[in-house]
Length: 235
Ligand SMILES: Nc1ncnc2c1ncn2[C@@H]1O[C@H](COP(=O)(O)OP(=O)(O)O)[C@@H](O)[C@H]1O
Ligand SMILES: [Mg+2]
View 1 (cartoon, helix red, strand yellow):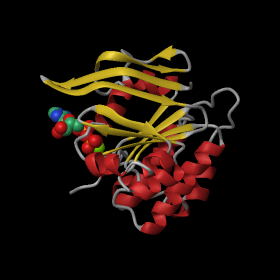
View 2 (cartoon, rainbow, N blue to C red):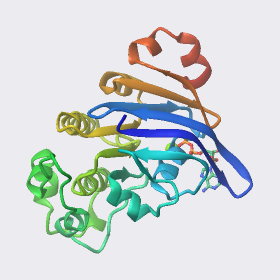
View 3 (cartoon, rainbow, N blue to C red):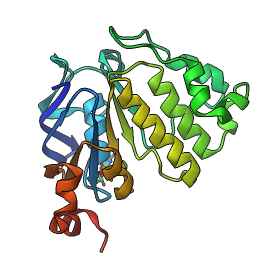
View 4 (cartoon, rainbow, N blue to C red):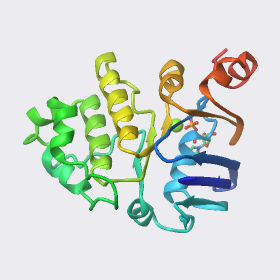
């Protein structure tokens, strides 16, 4: 197992939000983390990154314990993170934002280059000398994904990457995610659009009230209308 999350608990103040989350991610696979708004998906990613402190449990990447590390140390250990809110440096140019993300490659993997990023998103190349703060929301989202990839992570955690993007850009983002897997990286994808999440993932985890309430393949989830009704569809 490349990444194992075991019995993870987290609190915001006195509110107990994560109640023993378990996740397992194999090398070169895409895992979708599904659930209704408020079910704890973003908190799970933030706790894995050390942005929210784990109050119990562990996160182990390639045998290395990540709980207790600070976010930059977690990133250095190999977890990349694309948060829901697009995080760009508004006063730096597109190119400077990309350079901020550069980290040396990990053994065995070919490094990602800014050229790769511009091939995926020619729009970013056109705007490479523009300040990131002047980009549209969608462009800032692409830039955030690219900056994380340039850190050459082993596993990329992506929180609702297609939220608010035009359908054409959604397709490109999904292509990038499939390409990431081809390169042997793993992806944990929080995605609201169920069809997309089921199409790309090998494995699906459904969260409800801060716990994993279902774990299986996309086909297994397709065969469980009860799970979809109780934990996914908005009634
Ligand atoms: N910064 C915060 N402070 C207090 N409560 C929060 C905070 N962020 C999220 N929560 C609460 O934690 C729960 C899980 O939220 P979140 O992880 O964002 O869910 P999801 O990403 O699945 O929509 C929700 O009840 C939410 O209101
Ligand atoms: Mg969220």
